[in-house]
Length: 332
Ligand code: FO1
Image (cartoon, rainbow, N blue to C red; front, side, top):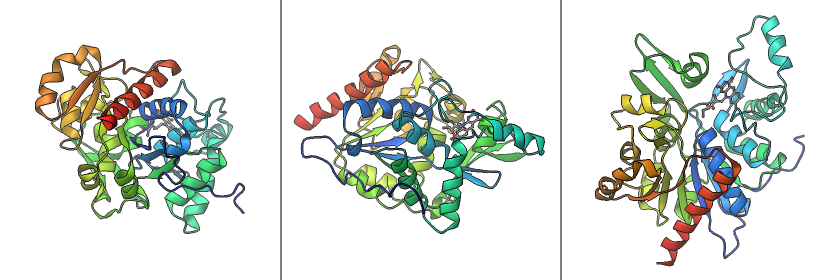
């Protein structure tokens, strides 16, 4: 059997009348910080996360969903905050043993993290959907928020380099994002369907937050699933983003290089262009205030804020600011 009973995980299934139902579009580390901040300002049960699965990979025959797990561990209070992925206090004995047996060990799977991947792999092999096993894993860790994969079907972010292609994890972890990139594809996206609950969550949210994640490799795959952009265009909820770009550079990771490849400016303007025409507001760093008039011309209201989350207090303050702005808009 599967341990703890499967939790509810439908969009906003138990929302109280007074609380805002917040939906987030999320990649990995940057998203996890903001979502952790949101969870300090509101009941987790009113929070739904649509997670990127373009980074998903197979390691030693195990199915790994890094972005879903990063958000899940963050909401469970178990994330390794320094690394931004995996479990706090983790050990890597199995990894060392696998190296002895000649296995690839560039992707660091921790000993306790393995339990997540073993459980997921067994469930998927038994014919369960990714959404079902994600809900069960999250429930087992005491997470009350609803974490939905963008799709139950495989979508893989492929990085085109001169003379070949890499999976996202080969590019990001094995090659440390140091290779030249000539293009990014979302393999499988054209025929993928949104996971159950995704479209309904977009339709019924009071506010939708696009986390400060990489627009090309974290949010891009979510938007590539047919039906999701249409739902974002037609939802009544305000869609608020947080810029992952500050002062012409990515807050973390290879977003700048990948945005250039896509022809997007490495600035809040490029972020807004990636999310046009449905993004309504964008929280930007004070250093980027000069972008505000052009953002306004593009139909995006700019809100200067302290968007770099280096402490838990920053995460909470940014989350609170987003909720306040959204509540103001609802009251208008
Ligand atoms: N990131 C790394 O930089 N190195 C790793 O070895 C690594 C292992 C890993 C294992 C499980 C997991 O859930 C995430 C892991 N990550 C690792 C993070 C992951 O590569 C990225 O943060 C995301 O895919 C980008 O959002």
